[in-house]
Length: 161
Image 1: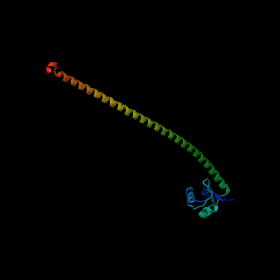
Image 2: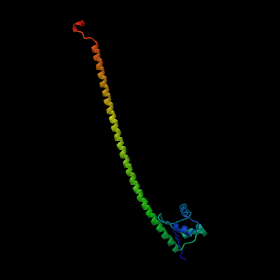
Image 3: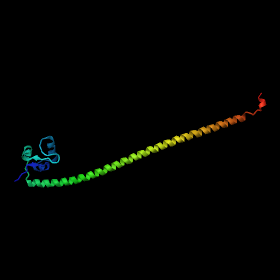
Image 4: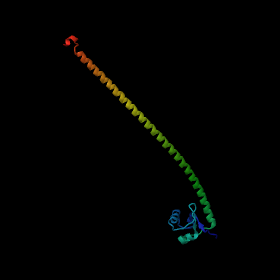
């Protein structure tokens, strides 16, 4: 039987009894299992799996590994499509968010402008009210003066001495 030498984490899960995805990635992160490869694909040596898991590790044949690899690629393709869809939705949401923020700032500017207009109108109203009050007071003073003048009899100039 032709056995694999290196396993992806998904293949290692299938080759080790009782191993699950979260645990293998946690073991890799903690350094309990060494692996090679970059961020894109991690590869775990078969001897490393045998060392860590002992009798629970049952090596996969190349045919089984190919089947799991094909499933992984299908899953990755579906994940990529889903990620693309999510990225598009995210972009749409960001654009909508930006447009809403612009509308809010426009409304805030409009509110500020209207508040300035209201303050200006109130100032004009107060000025006109003050002026009307002054004129009414002035008119009443004139009436009082006229009444005083009427009350005092007019004397001829020769009677003043």
